[in-house]
Length: 448
Image (tube, rainbow, N blue to C red; front, side, top):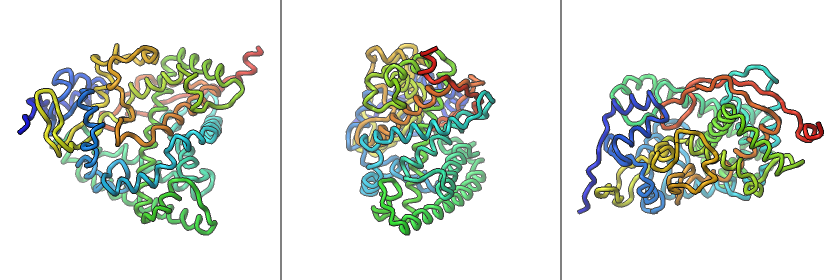
C-alpha cells in the first residue's frame, strides 16, 4: 500500500484573507509558507513542475474530469461544454468543434481578425476618456469570434442579438454576487445561497433566450441551404440537440473571452511601459513593411512581439488554477497522492515562483531572450492530452489584434492601479479608463 504524503494544510480563513489582500502575489506567499505541494480542504494543491507534468502528461489522469467541473456543469445553466466533459461525450464534442481550432483554419483568419479589430478600434473617439478598456476589447473580440468561430455577420440583427446575449451571459456570471470560483469553501458562502439561486434563475432565462436565437439561426440557414465550416454548422452536422448546441456555443465563447482578458492585460502593460509599445510597433513596421497584418509565418521574425505575448501569458494567466482528478497514485514528495482524488494545479504560483523565475514579480518580456530556469514551469495552455484546443487561434488573435491596434493608435490607460479580483478566473476589479490617440501612418512618418 502506497504511503500518502504528509503535507502541510493551510487554514481556510487565513488563505482567503491572504488572497483577498494580495490577489496575485498571495498565491506565491501561500506556497512559500506551506510548500510547493500542500493539502487544502482535502485536495492536493501543487505548483511543483515535476508533479504537474506527470498529472498533465499521463493519460490515466486525463480520463476522468474533476468532480468540481462536473458539479459546475450541473448547477450553472449554459455551462456544459468540452472543458467540463470526459469520456465519449468529450470526444464527440471535440471532434465536432475542433476543425475551427486547427492551426490551418486559425491561420487563414488573420485578415478577418485584422480588418475586424481595426474597423472597430477606428470607431473609438479620438482623445476622449473611455470608461473601460476591458469592455472595449470584449466588444472587439465578440465581433471577431462571431465571424471566425460562428460564421456570422455581427452587423446583421440576428447575429448581433446572439452576440449580445453571449457577451451579457459571460458578464453576468463574472460579476455575480455568489462567485463559485473562490479558492475553497467557507461557511460564509452559505449566506450567498439565496443570491446564487436568484442569479441562477436569471442565467437560465439568458440561456433560454440564447437557445431561441440559435434556433432562429439554424432555421435561417436551413432556408438558405447554408453549409459552413463554423461551430454552429459543425455542431448541427454532428447531430447534437438544440440544447447541446446552445450550451457548447455559450461555453466556447466563455473560453474565448479569456483571450480578451489577456489582450487587455497586454495593452494595460504597454501603457505602463511605453518603451515596449514603441519597440513592438517598430518591429512590426520593420517586418511587415506595407503589409497590413502579420501571419504565423512572421512569428519567428517578431521576437519582441512574441516575447511580450509570452510574458503576458506568464504574468497574467487566464486561470489562476485548474482542477484535475488522479487516475492512479500520483508521486508527490514524501509519498503518493491516491487515485480518484482532486488536484489543484496552481498556475499563478508556478508562473510567479522565485525558484523558477528571476524577479517574477516584474513584468519583463526580455526574460524570454534567455534560457528558462525551469521550462516546465510555463504552461499557459497546459500540455498533454487535455491541453487547450484553442491555443493556435488564441496566439494568432493576440498578435494580430496587438498589431492592428499598435500600428493604428496609442492606448493610454488612465489608472494603472486597478486591482484584480481574488477568484480562480481573474478579472479586473474595476473599469480601466483609457483614451486613444490615432497615429500617423508609418509610411508618411518615415517621409517626414
